[in-house]
Length: 294
Image (tube, rainbow, N blue to C red):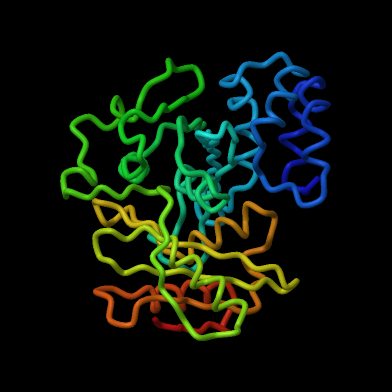
């Protein structure tokens, strides 16, 4: 079991600890549980879907990186597949606060990068901020998405974001997490460039068309790729670097041990991720960063 889970895990009931142990003790636990695994856990623990998601929140919050706020937020995203995906807030010392990742963004992006195509619910231990409510409205579920909070009645995103502004107001039919393949191509044999290109090909940028992807190579050689996730309100958009860092952190990697990074983006796009990507990686101790355009 990854050390970050030890404290939260020890505070679970003995029954739930036993039910979760085979998955958390497995090498490389991916901070997600499949629908099949969840059925086994529910049968063993006697918990319902919602009760189990609430019980897992402290374990999700244990994945947070909070050198600035020291405030730990956990989120659990339920996919249309029935899988559960962990998410947590992530902060980066010496980088602008705009580079931080909110727990709901983390859980949603985590699910997206694992191949999930839609969500039915988000369980979170604190009320979603306005930034996250707007980010969630980019999903296909829109304001129908269920928001579950401890000691509160179930509600929908529409209850938290009335009279919402979103893709439909801009006549955009594409939604975040919808399967896409943009078909961008590059002539390169570099594995990291290929991974970043594949991420760009699945990115969500219907407003700017500035599709982009980032791939990170950890010091141990593991690769993590992230895609740009644009938002109708622009500011809640999640850069591709943050998506890659989400996958790295949630998988148990160390965001301060990045050996090399590649950004792939359109050459003449209306916006570029280059400056923010390079500067944020510099604060994380990675100077080996390159930009490749298609």
